[in-house]
Amino acid sequence: MISLFGKGISTMPANKPKDWLKANPDIDWVIVAVCDLNGVLRGKRVPRNQVRKALKGGVRMPLSACAVDIWGRDIAESELVFESGDADGICAPTERGIVLRNWKQDPSALLQVTMAHEDGTPVQVDARQALATVVSRFAEAGLTLVVATELEFYLTKSKGGTVVPSDGNGNTSPSDNVLSVSELDSLTPFLDDVYAACEALDIPADAAISEAGAGQVEINILHTDDAMKAADDALQFKNIVKDVADKHGLTATFMAKPFGDQPGNGFHVHFSLLDSAGKNVFDDGTEEGSQMLRHAVGGILSAMQESTLIFAPHLNSFRRIRPGSHAPTGAGWGYENRTCAVRIPGGPNEARRIEHRVAGADTNPYLVLAAIFGAAFYGITQKTEPSAPIEGNAYDASLPSLPLGWNSAIARFQSGEILPTIFSPMLLRLFAQTKQQELGHFLSEVTELEYQTYLETV
Image (cartoon, rainbow, N blue to C red; front, side):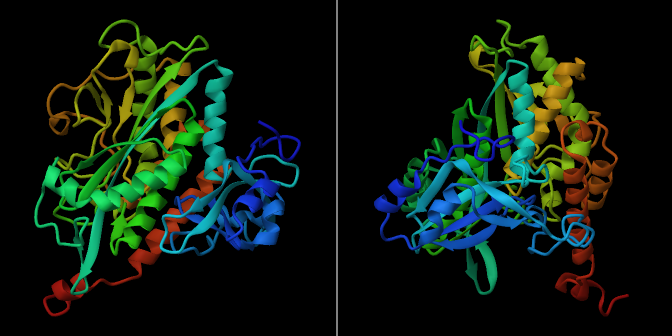
């Protein structure tokens, strides 16, 4: 890796300006974008003659772009806006460099960047930099994270002004159809395009299944020993799926709970740890796993309540976290138990790993991975012991309850004691302010259901 700015951020984009320009004579512009706290790409379009500048870190954007609300509005209390003069930061290209988005309806190019200050130091309110900080702690301890992810989404279409689940042919999906081969067959053209796009971006997309909801799909992304790439892949995958769906006349949604009577969309994270010799430190030759695995689980469970806002960041997120919904509501763990928030999958001992099942698919992958891995590191270093593993239905167990509402999740996030050891104070402040501003906007809107229920009855 080479440093673009002398210190701090070290990245080496995959493209060299001269080679890229020569290989892509028909591309007239590139989108340069950073991932904000909500997991949304925000940036600017630069003309072809600025590609050299962009790949050398010469493009600048306001630091405040890292922390805006879901509608793209500045956070009213943000210290990055008026208090600091809304200063610019430097846009450092990420390792993937410029990617061609040939799968879109109108092919284009994208350069994802991460933010740096003038002196080259990372901007800690940049979610990608927050994850990089956590990953570096493991590296300094001689440990390497091995990460795999699973993302669920729905294919939908509009019917009579109402959004309904759809199959790959644009037909309404009438019912739940878990592991349906016929539904996968109908998705073949869509899935072929998704897999082709993933291959072009070196995203190791693996098995696809028809999930429990009508029109719901899950695609796994294979494990990698590069945690930053795992997060980049998850973000790019979500955008690929939405772009390809649009090309097929559909809408793909990663909303946590797009349909009240259907299962929610989850973002499940699997991870293990390798020592300097390449040995999985979660494996001690038994099915139970090592003491380090237990300590990692203990840290994750200890931080779970205060981290819930990261795993469920939106109003809609809390429609998914309900008892019996296949989304955890309590901080518990178990072996081969999918009703638990943390599951230890079976299989060969050398593949012993932790699966985190709380986050919705509507989350920011960088913040989710940083929260999980940061809590695991806390547990390992503090030698935190977890509670006893749950056998049977975790919904019936007496467990510390996760916040089940947006307001309570914000309050628990702000009073957290472990999160300040993981994230910068500025990121914690701005994320809480972002969620408070979004909550305030929703509370100011009166819904049609409220009028139908209360207008003439109270």
